[in-house]
Length: 66
Image (cartoon, rainbow, N blue to C red; front, top):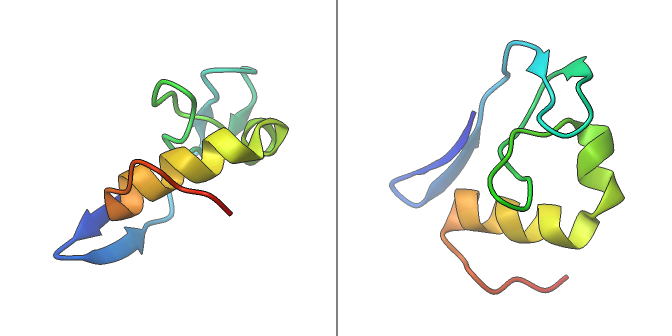
């Protein structure tokens, strides 16, 4: 699970689950386009969206550019 606790970004290890996009069993994060839980490989297929969603989840930032 990834979340922001009192302004601090916290990323916990997760139990493996089925990726909402590709179906592979892996550790997931909720960084998909619509908040889907996705694996690392799916996250790397659209790095811009993954970065944007990670910034939203961890820092509450809507507009993020690398």
